[in-house]
Figure: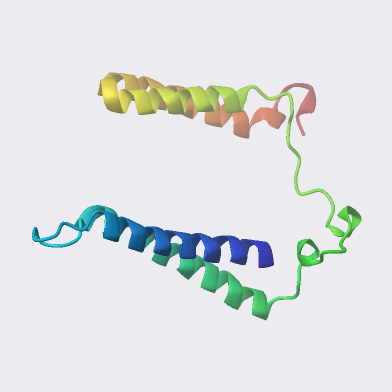
Length: 138
């Protein structure tokens, strides 16, 4: 978990420095101080990133090192298959299209959102039950 810990901690440090730089660059002399929204957003993002980084560091102390944490580790050290995924499946494309329709519906109108949601339900059911019919059924 070393890489993930460093990623979140350095992201938190970056956003903390960005908050300081943003605060100083948007300071309004004689007009009441900082620009509140952007500064607060950057401070909150820095805090959330640091919280995740600290959590990962504390969790890494309690568990054994993973094969990914060993710099001399080999691919063969990793566990076996993580699942069965169908590379020929078209259902994720239909699900992504329905999500795009739903987001378009938020801008255009609720009737587009409803059409996207109905297509999404059909696509999700098709993807979940893909192996339960035809020659691949169990």
